[in-house]
Image 1 (spheres, rainbow, N blue to C red):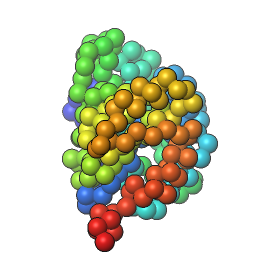
Image 2 (image 1 turned 90 degrees about the vertical axis):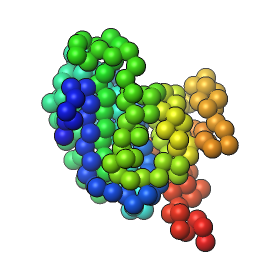
Image 3 (image 1 turned 60 degrees about the horizontal axis):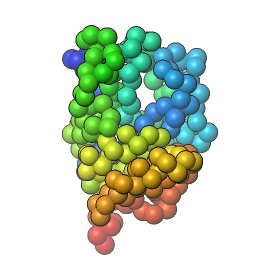
Length: 217
């Protein structure tokens, strides 16, 4: 559903995660191919292994939440109906492999957008953490044990600002990775992977999503 705000989208499929660790995902370049301003469902192309990776998290009861900047709306390349159509197509693709998203949040505001969507620094637009914080409030997830996977340093920056446990940057370039690693500290881990499937495998194998009660035993 659209929020009562021209530039924000918030769709929550499950009311609460009971303080579980969650996985936040950027969309374009992570779950689907980045085709630059994806606003038509026929242009959607899933990244290889992405659906199965999300299904693995679903099977572990790890909430999976999409947090995506959508400046294409502010720039007039498509509208919220186009976004809705793409998301419906994405849901269909995920369902085909037994996967689903627990929440979808999007921010259309951009400094170069047309009014009323022109905003230099909206709190929901990554690298700001607003989408993550709003999702956590609505889903009751434990941010301190949650993770974000993205293909931009701004995704990792948003995760650090939200107080997540860490972020995985999908990149084959040393430059962005070095920039992202500057965000690492004793409370925030930065890792890298080639794709979502590899990132999720590493997170699961390292016990990043272990339930708190199990971790305390």
